[in-house]
Image 1 (cartoon, helix red, strand yellow):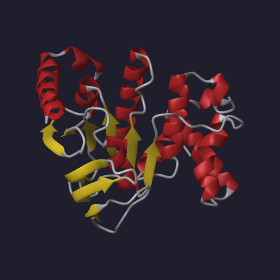
Image 2 (tube, one colour):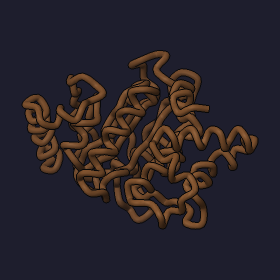
Image 3 (tube, one colour):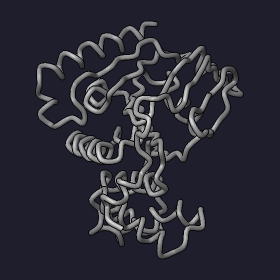
Length: 264
């Protein structure tokens, strides 16, 4: 199976722009009394690249966990449209790879847990590694990989089950700027081919504008959406976009909304 075949088989945008999941009046209070979210409304559309942007502690990661089913809201509801909750991939802030396993075997793990036949699973894992540019490092262990390579393995592991939705929780925050920009471009290239739905958490105005079709700006705790900004620039973006006057203008506008969120 080729890398392009993997991307072609990933659930795409048969109903482009239609809601895939809606969060209605969501509140989340933790056992220690912390009210992380209150009155949060958010619609995620099929095939879009949506970023959640907001100050630390505003509940961005909590939103991802609720969408993934890793927690339950204290109030409100989560409505899945169409045929119900689809397969979801999750990329965490840290690569969280098994140190005793090669890159290939780390990517294989979700398929092993699903009892996919060995030959089929290996072919799929190899194809996804190729899609993220890591074929030469398939037999390398995490200690032998750079931070950027580890995150590529983590993305490949999330993609290997062909998820319809990819949730990404600040996956590039710990990387240097050059590596971060390269992975931004690589992620956009993967998304352009497959058009899975992405919900991407970031603290960076610049990253959110470069990647996204839409940015949901969240206010400080308790978290809620206070602005929904559409990015009209053509997608996927090219590196030259970062140097354009249009990019600078959108970054200023989004930065203003973020400052409002911090003051809210």
